[in-house]
Length: 547
Image 1 (cartoon, rainbow, N blue to C red):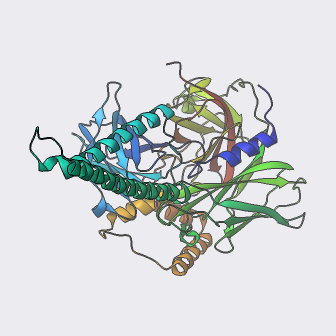
Image 2: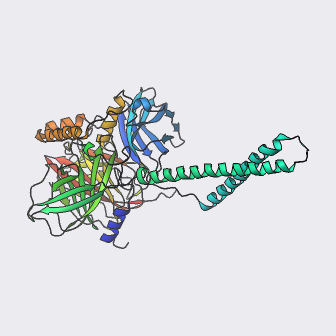
Image 3: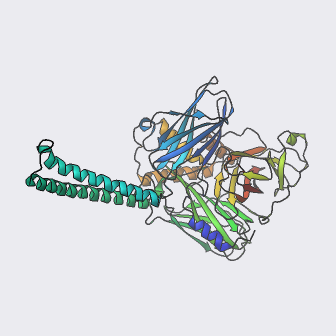
């Protein structure tokens, strides 16, 4: 494989159109335990709206007799949602079904599970936006045009005949006067049909323009600069929303309506290319509606891909992208903007599969499963990829990626909550075309789930309007309040806002995911141990399935 250049990374990044919530991986994968039911849920949203979302539910635990699904939109709420469609159990086990999503923006799929183990409901947030244009095949267009022309001729002929032939009996010779009436009727009919077709064409052109300019997803432009002194460089991220619209807001993105995810208004990831050997997870502070600033940690010089995750009040989440050029190594910067910021410099990603590093384990780790790979961590402990199916994984297949922590003796060592969760993961394709920020419960934002769950519980037919400045001030006060709390108390507050997430195994974190395309990937897994954020780095290859 040829070494990928920095320019090719930048070109790939800038050409990506489906950059909401993550990049290059539109499907939602969720692992949930509700009551006695253990579920692995996959939702593939449409790339054209209105469109059909493909829903698959794998029952891992519990006795299920039926599963229903329906879309619920943030602004319409539960009262404006349709009835449930019953999913069909397929021959290979999972329940499957197609659910129509009729509106762009923030929505959710509500699943109802029934069986001997009780009745349960699950909410899966879905970003429903148009990301593609459909071009009609040439042969189909020619065929439809010919049929349309035939229909026009028949309609004009019918109008002319009704104006003349319908006034005398069958077999009677048509007088010249009636022939003139027939021609006049056909002329009038042709004019009426032409006016109708012209009006339809104008409506269609307007609808097409609205789709391209307002419904088709466009990501905002970021202007990212490095300011401050060489000893204390600062990253400034400014959003340019000129000319860009957001679903449910036809004229502008409502940046005053950002909500915190894990207590942070923005999660920013920096990855140096092409080696993917320098990584930072930062949490910039909001300066005003459009600008966020963050102190840069000790990173080497080079070109970096920047991914900034934000969530809006409606539950709509997106990833904003840019590139950053750090011209000189940052060696003197020690202060950080946020105590939860973390960074790591490691080896470059290889173009060849790496040999798994074997670990020295005791019985407490072996019972967790067979490790597929092991990496050392900064504090001397080790992180292990447990139950890895093989050296090469397959595209389109839902996996549960499990990672465990072991101390220097190979004994299971507990992890602590990190931003209210057992861990965080980031996956990046080695050409930059796929990026996702993972959580133990799934591939969506926890803040989006919380916002949608609250909206569904609301009995109002429409979401209430809120003044932008009032909303923003309340969010800023809440974020500032979280910073004043001791870490233990802050984690309790954050965990309470995420009822679907529960730390079950104190030395392990898992992430459900389905790789969207073949290639080589780097995975960063972040956990906290003894008050320090630790980052494990794993590489894996993914191929298209043989069948």
